[in-house]
Image (cartoon, rainbow, N blue to C red):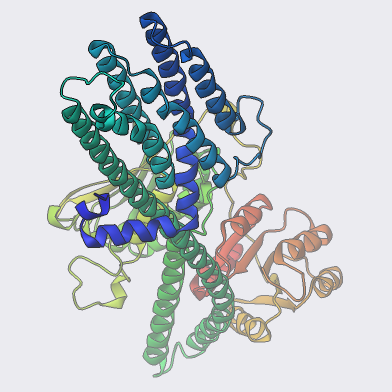
Length: 597
């Protein structure tokens, strides 16, 4: 009987195909080698026990010779396959399969020679000896089940002589007939067949399990390859978006400046509403473009965090500079309460989160105002943004964090925003591992709380810049040095600021900017610089070079389409205000007007 007959055809075919796999065959072979070491222990102990029992009965003087032969053959078989911890050189290969099987056959044959030699006329002793031989086979076969040839070459030489002795004993006149000799032979044969069937089934199961394991490993390897491909695609997409962002932001930035300049010139003409609508469309496009790029970068996982310990008041001051004018224009109160709190977070990303929350609060508040406060929280410091706006229904709490979703704006009125700010807030909070909490009462207002770890005042990072301050006020003509390699942007900025009595000196390279600063008849009041200039030049180096001529205290603004964290950190460390392209013209006008107040 064969184990294959007991298994469904598909399983048999699968097991046969699995054993044909060289990887599975190698594992099965090595597993059988590992089991053969324990088989050797069983053989040696059994041989000593049989020899001792036979000698005690005084039936044979060859028992110890037989025992020595079994032990010697077992040692010869196992010594080349000794475990690695037993003086086995690293990387040594196990003995060749054919040689191992031959030695296994010889050792099993020596073991099987015991029954014909030692079955005596003592029924009790013979029954005990038969039990020992059958027990040794029953313990050894499962240990060798991983390699089918090893099962056959160990079981048949070890048990066939026992079966033959029991079956032929009644026909040999010189030997006494054991009671029920044929019955014992039949039971032994049945034991051998059942043992062979169970062992083969175990072999098939091992092969199928190994096939599943290697299949899973192959799938994991394929998955890793696909992940690597996806990661490369993400990186390529990110590089493409970065390049596209810069290339697309440039003309959009220039277009906004030209339209703003046109709006100024047509302010007292019938065409004013038309230009105003153009400006509204451009601002909406700028906002959509920037938000979608931010979402794509966060989802691609390319935004890296740089935690620092810093006072939150510096972030609050920059936020007031950014949104104070908008709050005043809408007759809303905007207050900040830092209360000396020290936090541990990425200052640039955290400022982005709070900026979106403040902007969102101002957008949905019609009366009252917005309060931004830093307060104690059980898990650190709670940065809370309170408003007296419309509030959020309980069933909308999760929906507000979805892209392009806005409460009470089903018609997608772009004048009320895009619905992307809170989606960006949640993504950044998840990236920073800062819990985000929301409480609201419809008709009364809302509070968003970002929980950040508390920082130690003694661990404040020395590289963390203090809050950017507004440039000093000046009476009379203002002189601005603009450094940008795009001719359209230089002309658009000059046209935009000319009605404000601003003398705009334009340069396209660092050398040209330094030369103009040295030869300027008026001191440079402010520096505007793009980040990417010609060749390897950048805006940070340009500002440093101009400040070396005009003075380190000269206010400078870096205008860039790049939103990478590394750039923002470099700009802040250099004491630069960062504005992102496409820049809304009113932001630029607001900075320049402050010089003239």
